[in-house]
Amino acid sequence: MKEAILRMSIHRSAMGKAVKGQLFWFVLCVVLLFGATTRSAAAQTNDVHTVAPGETLTSIARRYDTDVATLMRLNGIQNPELIRVGQRLAVPSNVAGSGAGRSSLQGSNLQPSAAFDLQATRIYFALPGDTLSSVAARFHTTPAHLAELNLRSLSTPLLPGEALRVPVHDGAAPIFTTRNTMPLSGRAYVHVVREGETLASIASAYGTSLRRILELNKIADARQVKAGQRLIVPPPSLAELFAATPMGTNGVPLYPVVPTEGKWISVDLDHQRAYAWEGNKLVKRFVISSGKAKTPTVTGVFRIWAKVSSQVMQGGSRAAGDYYYLPNVQWVQYFYRDYAFHGAYWHNNFGTPMSRGCINMTNSDAKWLWDWTTPTVGPGWHVLNESNPGTLVIVHR
Image 1 (cartoon, rainbow, N blue to C red):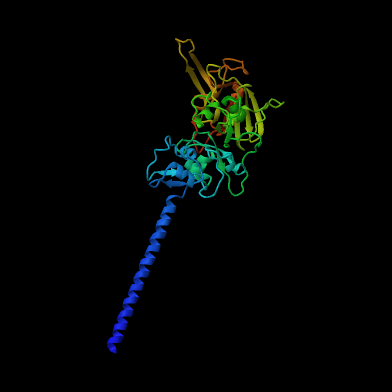
Image 2 (cartoon, rainbow, N blue to C red):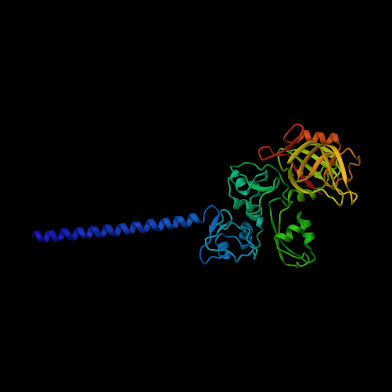
């Protein structure tokens, strides 16, 4: 009897150990499986996808409800066939499985702009030293989402003064107002070419440039477009948007947007005028002389990057007969490379292009502008930086 009880006890003990062993291996498998799943999910979060064996850009695009062209643009990829296992790719923000409505270049009728809530965005102007990552952190988003929102590559560096559309959170109001009937900086369109249309006429209709349409659609010859062709039309820059602005009866352009609530300067080259603004309030207007036809003034969105109260300006060539030497040029404010606002004492033909690219003003106007722009500085040279940025400047035709 004792032997039978002993055998039963041993049998129960063995069964208990077997069950415990099986339970241990079951729990271990669950933990490993959960860990692998977690790692797999973690590898694809934060708007980054790690390429797995057998994946292509096409399959990755399908997974994130986007298209190959968007992935190529976000990652600066020239050849869609040249991706490798383990490569980390930026992917559009918050789109996996969401049906976010992005337009495919292959046949959807939706506009890319339909994915953007323009009422929840504002314009931000890049400061010296800004990167997509630093701007994304400032506005609580990701670099990939900013790149997607602005139709740009993650690898393209930001330029000081460049306009970026950024998200606004927590119900904050946009910093500017817009007319919804006009193309906006930051919004892209899909245009289906109609009979008789040219790329130049399409660019003009959308307020953007022919060059940007050619680049974005990888078109080598502007004459090689045909009816029915689908084109991505890039958003206009603020300089391009302002170029289409009508002149008011009071001689002030009717700009469709106010780019900042602070101080900013607009320069209208066609009318040879400059305007100082605070938000939507005109503070002062000037008659100027910009660059001649052979030495035109640059157009675009900039910030004043250096100020000097007086300097010598010289250049040109004695052999070519265009050498110049101008001492004591006053109230100089550089906004792009060596393009500047400054006083001009050697002519009085304001209202007519006269310069080699700079914006000539009377000395009194140049002094007023020098004192008004931010930051306020004393005599001598002052190079501005991110912590002390200069006033916004928009130069347009």
